[in-house]
Image (tube, rainbow, N blue to C red):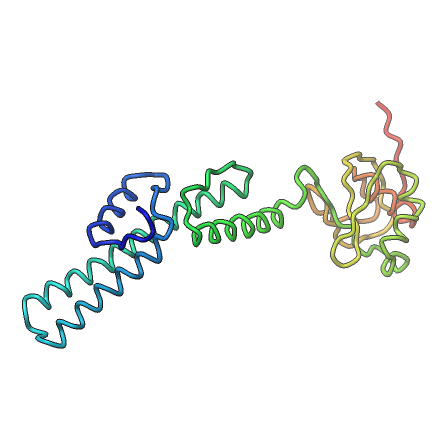
Length: 230
């Protein structure tokens, strides 16, 4: 419907019937919400004008019922379209190529907000897809105040070429490589959070650990490498 034509109560009823029957957004006039607000205001004005004349008249009662019905239809049309926009936005945040030509200007802004917020939430939860990170805890006074640059230059780390470290909150680091080695623990250690489990390590424990974390322990004389032969 062209934007210069005023919406009628019948147009509103028709918009609701079409919207509720379709799983996809119905094709509506681009000024849908402006037209809805204008219709709502017009119906309210008619009711108030008649109410001021004779609040007990049949005409006033009929206008009141139309006012209530119009408000219900407006709410239902808005909610139906919002639900569909939300679903589109979630799919869009996961890479779907949505057709957006049926969105009004207001809905397009709502859609973009959903996509952006959903992407941020998804990225915060998943972080970097395919990576399994672990945090290297404070295992000794020597490492407690080490920066990420110092840890990068630590012999236990630099001995393993190809291991990329990323900085995590709190100044700890994580690795993205899954290579593991077998070590024997020389002292009792605090809990270490690994990619697949937490390590509660005590003296004389033998454990397979990610190579970078294991070598940090070895370098600071907290563990020794075990040569495992077939």
